[in-house]
Image (cartoon, rainbow over all chains, first blue to last red; front, side, top):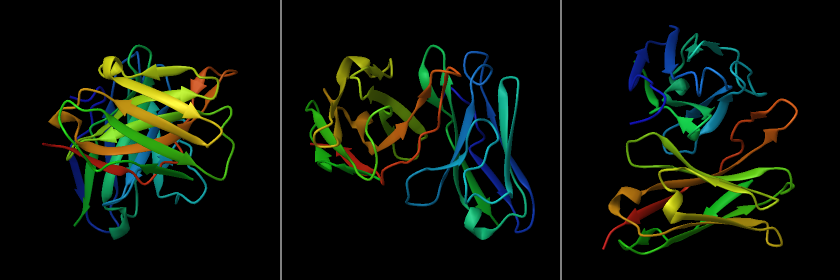
Length: 109
Length: 121
């Protein structure tokens, strides 16, 4: 059971937009930055979003993120087949240290 | 760049020893981290070590984990004792940083490619 709650799966067709949620509490998302990682099949996670909404260089602006209160969301617009991956949210918890969501498997139909 | 190494198969009740080799950057100032992912599961933070020697561990694993840093070899290691099948996972090493001025942690970046560990007799 992960400390942060993500839907196990999400899907969309090419060109569509999809949103993945990440729910926590005041001791984690509510008071700390949220990070998102993209994990392509068979590879290690890669940083996708840092400090709630910032994109590292090289990450397309089709990827955006938002945090409000104790929840965060990752939005992907103009869905492409290469976006098919697992997406993980992460943050620091004031008691438990680093915590992750269970991951969301995104399928591009 | 980070690269994990270690045995792919270990027996129950034994100790897992993994090494992460750091190349192409400074060791100081960063927190060097181990994260694992059990089959079909999410990511789990195991712990970290700072260049100064400061360590911190996941409370659920703390009694079985030790992380060490050998700066002369640009390596840090993970020892996980009393293994069970539940410790079967891909183990990743990663780097993070703590900003004292803003009192916040930065992202895990970069990550190693991961090493698969199976606990089985």
